[in-house]
Length: 415
Ligand SMILES: Nc1ncnc2c1ncn2[C@@H]1O[C@H](COP(=O)(O)OP(=O)(O)OP(=O)(O)O)[C@@H](O)[C@H]1O
Image 1 (cartoon, protein in one colour):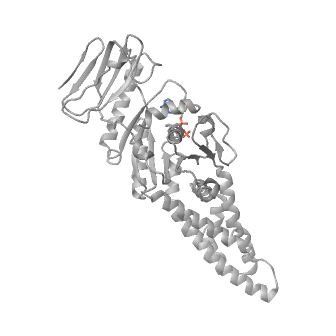
Image 2 (cartoon, protein in one colour):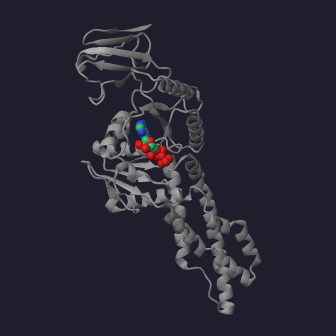
Image 3 (cartoon, rainbow, N blue to C red):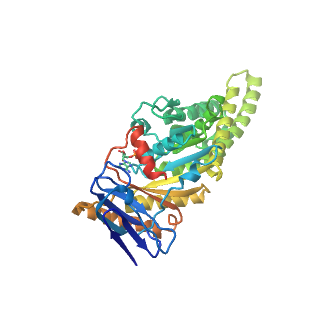
């Protein structure tokens, strides 16, 4: 069905059916298909126009040797970057997945690529364990927008402090019906209201805010930034989100908060009328500060906006990043199912850190590659993941740190 021919300077590979081919070309002058850095280089080829296609390496100089092999799972040749980059209306990309799979590297490299393609871009980390600063090799801490150096188009980065976000929620809810109010009501013998307050488990909510809250507040903070005149120029916003568990909780959080804040606000109204009645009789102080309810109401509105943003197919996409291991792919499958269940748009899957082929395949690499190949097959057979656009990103032999390295990775992944 397929075969290849190597002459001194031209190699052709033909196939009668669409398949992906991964190969190494070693040209005698050391040139390679993608980069001059490696004497051996990976190239990918996916004939889409069957029955026959070929690779020509004519420009690469005389070819000394070539290895080609069809790999089991046909992957997408491109990440569909043309579609991602087109249009000037604002688009949000949220990258998420298991811890350590390369979310930050993929998010930062995507942001760099958007900026290099003329989009004023903002990249935001909502992961409590930030690594954007490490990825860009620049101090981006401080919770405010910092310009990333070394790019022609504006690229700003923002690492949000989740602890601050939690504090904000804590202070808003405490003023408006937290333990202070409960004590006050107990003192006043307002048993019924105190019971209702107990039902809301406010104490619990305040002491251990629901997981995902910090991230939801962080995302809503970004939206606030973007509403301001100073920062409304961004046409691409890339989120480096926290590991999967956090993201899953974040998805259901806006509904949960919407309900609980709604209850708090209702209760606050009751408390306000009860306390003003008491005040008029006993002349005691104790009514919650008037701006507290506004603060909570604003928080609720922001949570609703976060929920809407996550589900807006015209402006938002969640990209799952994974690695070719059974564990990571199983987790990605669960994440994908939850995203779909919550109507969050998801269509791309990045399989990162795929071992490139090597001419001198050591035992360890051969084993590892087999393992990865089996894991990649899992994607093709997975009910949730098989329908996604699969983008394979190779494990590169340099640490991805700093703008040039991110550009390098971006050119490989985001095509
Ligand atoms: N394709 C790749 N080739 C080589 N190294 C990679 C690749 N992708 C990521 N890495 C490296 O893997 C490490 C983890 O990557 P990264 O910080 O992007 O992952 P993460 O998913 O954001 O991690 P965390 O969940 O801890 O935030 C980094 O040292 C990064 O340089």
